Length: 168
Image (cartoon, rainbow, N blue to C red; front, side):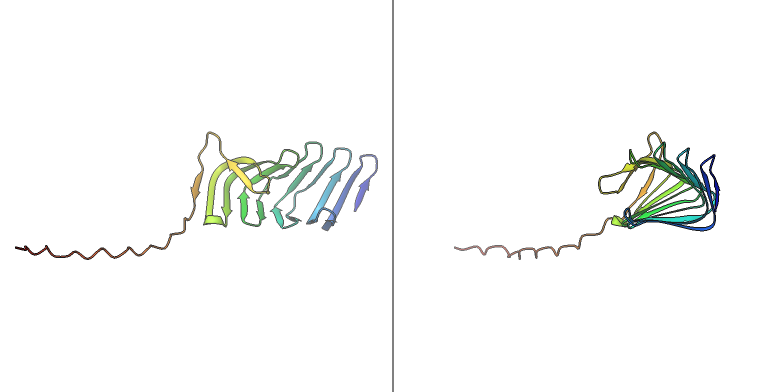
């Protein structure tokens, strides 16, 4: 660990694990740098972060406390129960819950085996933490599976009687 007191700068070299049991957060990475005066934390090494059942992975990480944002500038991969997001880079604001994902974005949902693809998707985390994304002015490819309803057996057609005999 390297600490520069005048700059209030901490550098944690090698493997780093940060735990916050109260928030259910675990961070595993390496070469983490904290700039306390600027309220910034970053690493240009791969990491994995857990918060409850949600997992975030990336090739680099930038946290900006003043902007209340987290950016994964390379190799963004987010997963939570029922859905995942992969992109070249992604950004999340923890105050507004806004999300932006850029570069070969793929969102997969287990419900209806849904897949969304686009070069850029933006939106927010919904009330239950689900991703609500769109691409204003752009294209999004969406594919999903609709389960087939079992076919009902048609009721047998009423038996046709022959013509009534002519009675005299």
